[in-house]
Each structure stands twice: as C-alpha cells, then as structure tokens.
Image 1 (cartoon, rainbow, N blue to C red):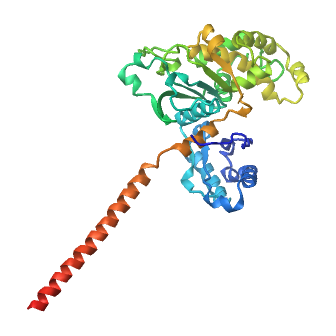
Image 2 (image 1 turned 135 degrees about the vertical axis):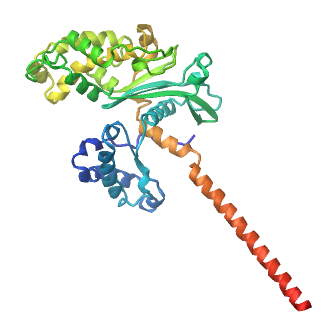
Image 3 (image 1 turned 180 degrees about the horizontal axis):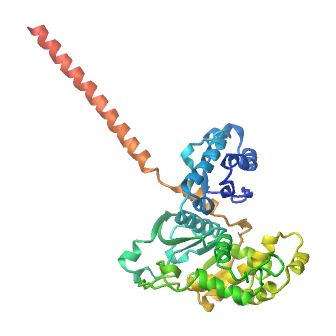
Amino acid sequence: MPIVDPSQNLKRKPGLSSFAATPEKAGGSLRDLRDFAQRIVPADQRDTTPLLLQATAGLRSLTLSEAEAVLESVRDELATWGFKFERHWARVISGSEEGINGFIAVNYLKDVFKPGVRQEDTFGVIEMGGASLQVTFCADNIDLLREDQQAKLVPISLAGTTFLVYTHSYMGYGQEMAAELVRKDAGDGDPCYLVGSFPKAKGNFKECFTRIKNVLFKPRESSCDSCSFLGNFQPSIKGEIFLAIENFFYTTKFFDLDTHRNFVDLLQEKGEHWCSTPFHSAQAQFPALTKEEVNKFCFASAYIPNLVNALGFTKQDLEKSVFIAKNINNSGIDWALGGVISYLTAPPPRSSRYLWIFLVAFAFLIVWFRKTIVRTVGTRITQFRKI
C-alpha cells in the first residue's frame, strides 16, 4: 500500500455545479486550491506530479452540455498550473466510483489493508453529501447471494487481497437535493421549514417525517428478494460495521448526538423540538447560521431516521454497528483520499498496455523486416556476382 499523508488537504466552497449558468467562472474558482498545491509540491517536481480533478454528484446532476462547459473552463485553468496534466484527467466520476473511493479512504485510515486481511475485516460506509448518497460495504454473507447478485459486486484488489464490494449511489438522496424534492411536493405548506422563515413554512416534525416518507421512500412493488428502497439490490445487513459520514456527522453534531449510540431515537426527539421553534428564536440562538442552515436541521432530523430505516437498518443494527464519524485517528474522512490511493494502486490502463504491446510488436517487425531485407539483398548481390 502506498503511504499517503491525509492531512495535506484543503476544502473550499462553492462546488463546481454552482457555475452551471456561468461556466467561464468555474476555473477561476479553483485558485485557492492551486496556491495550496503549489505550496505543498516543490517547483522542480510539479511537471512530474500528476494533477487530477474528479467531480461528483453536483456535476452529475447537470445536463451533459452544462457539465462539459464547466469542465472545459476547469481544464483551461488546470493546464496553467505547471503540473503534469492531461485534459481528460478532469472528469465526472460515477456514483459507484465515489462510493468505492469513500470505502477505500475509511479502511485505509483504519489500517485495515494489511496482508491476510479478510472481507469481513472491513468497514462499510454510508456517505450522504448534498446531492447523492453512497452505500458501500463488503457483505459478510456472499455465499448466500445468487450468482447474478454476486456478479453485481465490484472486485477491488488491495494489499494482496481481492475484496468483493457492494456499492450503490442514490442520486437525489443527498441532503440538499432530497430537501428540494420534498419541498416541490409542499403545495399546502412546508412542515420541514421553521415558522416565520418562509410564507408557507409550518414547522411540524411529525408532518415533515411523514412527508419525507411518502415522497422519497414510498413502498414500490418489487420482486427483488434482497433490496433496499426503490427496489435496488443490496445484500442484507448482518453484523457489518458501518461509518456514517458527511451530513450524518454535521446533523448529529449540531444536536450534540454524534457520540450517542441511539442517535436516531434522540435525533427525532431533538428534531421535534427544533422544528417547532419559531425561526426568529432559532436564528437568535445561532446567529452565524444562514436561513437555509437553520431550516436544514429540521429537515435532516426527520430525513435521517427515514433513510436508515429504508436502507434496512434495525434499531439493534444502529446501536451496535453504525458509528457517526468525521475523523479517524485525527485525519478527516474524505473520498478524495480513496481516489488518490485508487490512482496509485491501479494497474496500467488497458490502452497503455495495448500501446506497449503494439510498440513491442512493431519494433519486432522492424527488426525482422530489416534482417529480411539485408538477407534478400545479400543473396541477390551474391547471385549477381556469380552470373
């Protein structure tokens, strides 16, 4: 396994998707990252240091033309930084790749990837961002899955072991985008917003909880015998340990529940109180929060209990096997760390392997052709001299 220093990172807002209407400004928004990278990497090493940009759910939520316009602006900017960069290295990654990278990051920080590690030694990850949700884990009961279900698992080779990993990305089930979907259905008033924040805000936790369940997790007919919500295949959860990260942490931290084992039950109690608080009182308690931030915790307190139930976690699972986390051994959990490790441990791309095969074969043909020409010409000269 490569040695990666997870402390060397920097996070900045806004995300690239916020430049959908003004893509020409997207590249310039990265200059804080440029300055950071140039401070870390010595000038004489930059032209040999690969520079990659991997965009996630924000750009996946845009149209292809919108996303490509943003990426073109980004590519123009990155090409000026002095690092080793190719334009196709700035790209949108899939939800599955994002989930796998989060899984690798968590288990790398947990020091799981050692010789002899087993499938069941790994930690699963539930990552809820703003636009999407990723669920990724090594199922302990692979032998119970049908052959077609096993074929849906992703093989990952690290530390001499091949792990069969389940991953699924739910677009639209990140916290901010899920709130938008529920809000669209709030014609008679929005119970997930505090009274006084907007004209139709009702501030009612129970109504918010029910609205979320009906809009986002309404049962659907499905013949799948091993599924989570929306009929998506998911191995049953039987004792695997999970870390719930990103918005799971920020929400429970706000309510001072991030270290509680029964955080879901307590979150509902806290949420019921918070949702019923008038907006002006809530903002007075937290003057640094924006209107959206004050309101989002009402929605989140009702959304997270709905979500974990839809994913198949029982109350016992949550108390024994799901841990809220932001850091591991004082290092922040970030899927980008997993992306770095994936890049460093990946085999050469097929195209590169085929190119080397072609070059070797071509070189062989040149040598053979030259020998044949020399042999033929030599024979003809000898024959001519005999004549």
